[in-house]
Length: 350
Image 1: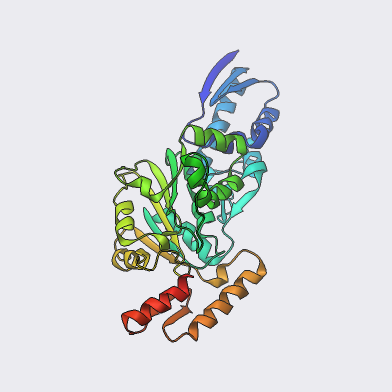
Image 2 (image 1 turned 30 degrees about the vertical axis):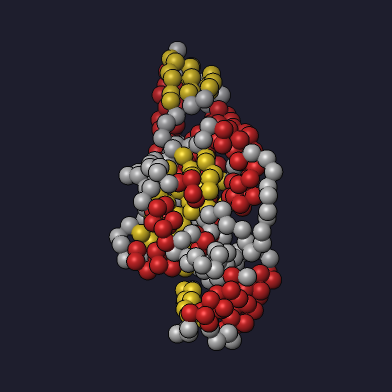
C-alpha cells in the first residue's frame, strides 16, 4: 500500500476539478482501485503502489496541459487517462476562441475577428486601448480576460474603474451610503461579472477585495500591482485623469482602457483625453491599440443599423465628421471658430 499527498498549484482549481467536480469524477472512475479524497487544492491518494504512481503521472500530465494552454477539455483528460502514447504537446489544443468558462460551464469566446485581435493584443501587451462603438464587446471581452488571468493565477486581483459621469442627464441626489451613490455608474461592470462568475464566488471575491470596482477618482495616489486593471468609458476621462490613471500601474500590472469617442458625456468645458492618449502612446512598445467597428456589434441586430444611421447623419453635419475606414474610427473637427466648435460639440454630446 502506498499513500501520497498531491498539491494542485499554478492552475485554476475550477479548470482542474471541473464544474461540480465533473473532471475529478472522471479521473476517479479511471482509478476504481484507489481511494481518492480532496480538500481545497490537496489530493490524498492511497492504494496499490503501481496504481498510485500511475495516477501521479496522469495528474502531472493534466496539470502540464492546463499550464500550457490555460484550460483542458473532458476529451483531453480522457485521452491522457486512456494511456495513449501521446505527448502533451500532441494533444488537441483548446479552442483558441474560448476566453474563459463561465457559470455552469458555458463558454465565453471572442465572436468577431476584431474581438479575437483584442484578445491576442491583451495577451501580448501590458497596456491596451480598445476603442469602438457601443455593443462591440469591448468591456465584456476585457472583463473576461481579467477573469481568465485571475483564474490562471497570473494576477492576484481585478480592479475595474470608470469615470462617474452622467450620460446626458442629471441624476440629482442619490440616497444611501457612498457605495449606493456610485453603484449606478458602475452597474455595467457588475453586469459583466455576473455573466462570468458564479454569484457566491463573485460575492466572496468582492468581500475579500480580490475584485474591486471603484470610480476613477479613487485611483489617485495608489500603486496598482499584480492586478488586471480595466478603465471603462475612458472617453469620459480628461487628459489629467488619464495620465493619473496610467501612472498608477505597478511592475506586474496589466491594463485595458476601453472607450467610444462618439459617446462623450463630459461637460462642454472639459475635453476628452482618450484620443490624445492614443495618439501619443500608440507607438510605445508594450502598448497596443485595437479599433473595433460596427461590424463587431454583437448586441441586437438593430444596434448595427442604429450606429450606421447616426454615423450617416454625422457625416452630413458640416462641423463634425465621423468615418469608419478599415475598422478604424476617425473623428475630427473642421477649422471653425471656437463658438462654432462649442455648438457642434453640444450637438454631439447631448
